[in-house]
Length: 87
Image (cartoon, rainbow, N blue to C red; front, side):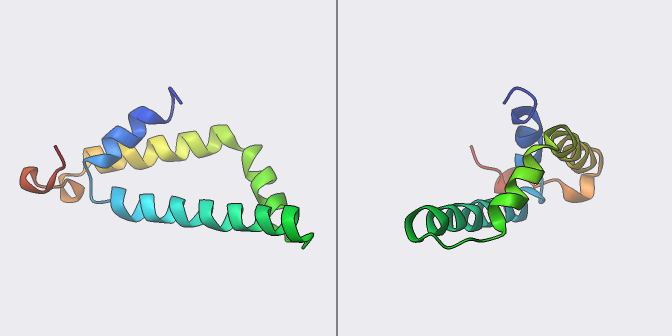
């Protein structure tokens, strides 16, 4: 958490944040639906295996998030104007 939250705070002030948040939410929804199908109905899906593989690459995911945040912070083109920022 301590490695991810600073990147999310930086991203929250950029135009990347809304699409990023929606994409991560969609991935979470698909993963949770696959988990429920597997547990409740006994339907095997490939999604849990993909989630397991992604979990083994946590450092790469954190570094990718940090790189995206750095790009968003470095390029004023991606900054959200002050009047659009949430307070």
